[in-house]
Image 1 (cartoon, helix red, strand yellow):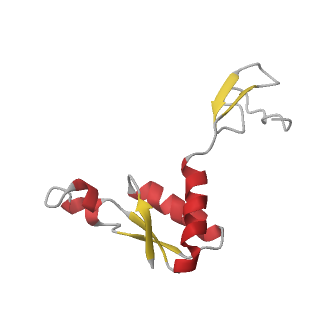
Image 2 (cartoon, helix red, strand yellow):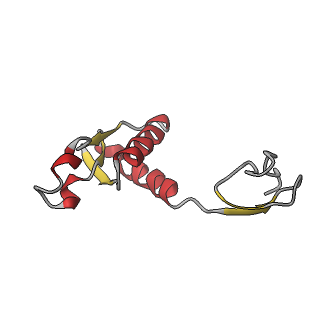
Length: 103
């Protein structure tokens, strides 16, 4: 069992763990409930952590986690209404049209 990294909050830790588990890796979240003692211990020691269960999966888990945390943003213009869309969105926030598949 090896630690992958800290997460800034429990919501992201759980999301990342779920995505890594769906990729076939055995990942757990540790320190889920330690935020309540953040004033008693250093704040970085109270952050949730991602741990991989099998040492041989550590490198793959780190690579996938790197992809998740550094996803490239896409810029595109909606073909239906012309709204400029930035970020990881695949649907126009203004009219609901899907992102063109050519991007």
